[in-house]
Image 1: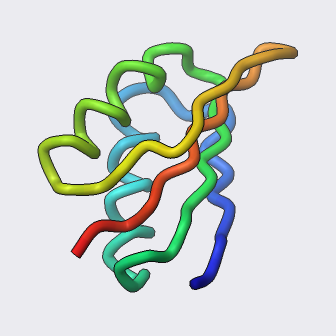
Image 2: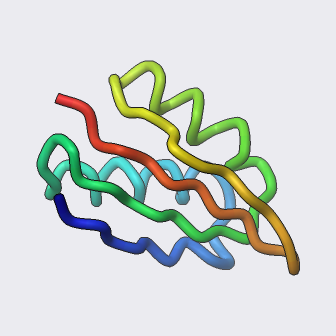
Length: 75
């Protein structure tokens, strides 16, 4: 299992979701991706996208105007 980080700071919707999608395409099932954003909309957008595409949200947190979502890549 690999854990990677995606810096999606200063990107507005839909770019954080698109960058997340592009990064996950390069990863293997079971890998984890930590996405760091400044757009609060990602707290709904990325989990919704993840459910549709079979990925699991492991953690969400926010603070200091940043929003972090950790995903596990599905098969």
